[in-house]
Amino acid sequence: MRVVVTGSSGRLGRTLSTELAASGHTVVGADRAPVGLPGVEERDVDLLDERAAQTLLDDVRPDALVHLAGIAVPFSAPESQILVTNAALAHSVLAAAARTEVARVLVASSPTVIGYGTPEWRASAVPIDETHPREPSNAYALSKLIIEETVRMFARTAAGTYGYFRPCYVVPPEEWAGAPTQQGHTLRERLEDPALAAVSLFNYLDARDAATFAEAWLAAPPHVVDGEGFFVGAADALARRPVAELWHELAPGLGSDADRLSGTQPVFSIEKAASLLGWRPRRTWRTELVAAEASGTPGTSVTAAAVLTNTETRTA
Image (tube, rainbow, N blue to C red; front, side):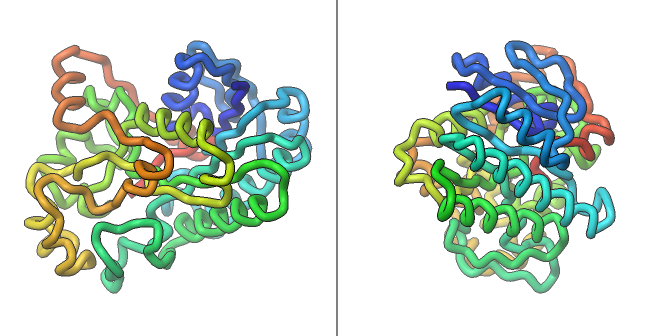
């Protein structure tokens, strides 16, 4: 399959692009800051320019598009800039895909659309699944809600198949080995101080598992995924102790439903992706953190410039 990945230089985009290429897909990455990805043809494109986005898709004529581009971190830019940039990018890219009649379009949203992160927030049920109310509490989360509705609009009106996914806190391979996360601390520090992971309700996702989800979504029957959204995360929580023990002090918004989380069970349910797509994550911090540190894989950081280009990462 010929696939365009926007935001291919981002924390998620780099791994997703190279993993799709390694699986045999022809991948074209689109970003304002190409980084030399192996096996990926990279294009320097400002996707806010609707004409440039259209020219890219007219030239490549992809079978599929995975849209990750956007300002990736809440409060990393003025709220109005985050809102306008992310919403405009999604509409620009999806409109170009519709005109080019791209068969499959998968778009990154975020778990933040449900609104956690404020003192007043309360979960409607735990584990949290795709039926949870969407109550964004900042411009980043609001932009993702607009993106989800943009996807739904094109699913109703365009010829192709459109869907979105909500990737949990993305961990690329180099961060298992000690590279700083987008918050500046390491994964080991995030585990040692559960308050750091509580901000995102202890969710996480190995970037390579995001790539296998994308493959499963691209291969699914159109009627199964058109207009649908999926939580995509690890099968456990990013915590050394069960969330059922931690929520009282660190995540009170989860409420007593969280007492029912057994053992390492995560807050966010991935059962919809498992039942409809047959997808399950393969990696957990319990194996990846130790393996990466033992191998001595060098860590590399993501620059601030990369965060504000056409890239996409998961945030707390």
